[in-house]
Amino acid sequence: MISAYKAFRLKQEKAGKTNETPEQPEKKNLNHPDTVSEFAQKVIKKINGIDTKDWSADEWEQIRTAFTGIKDQIDAFLNPSPEPS
Image 1 (cartoon, rainbow, N blue to C red):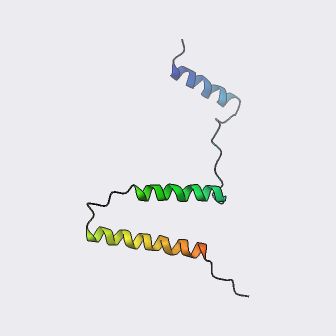
Image 2: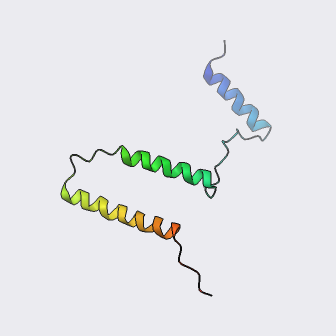
Image 3: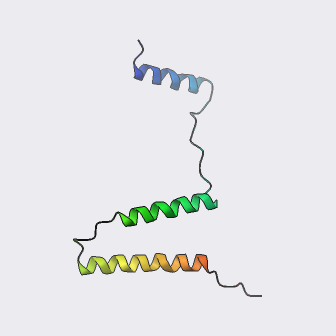
């Protein structure tokens, strides 16, 4: 019986001899609406999971400032200013 390590090494050697690279997962197109939507849903889920009960007033202010910056960027993305003619 071949150990997992030996099988791994054999696969590496074979890939090296044939100049093949191991298959990489397909990269997502970061400009595709589905990818952007998936990203936004993940961010919302993470924000909803934050435990804030032990935060001080200073910590709240720090986060409020950061989220306000994010909100401003999202507003600018959703409502772009008209381009000058």
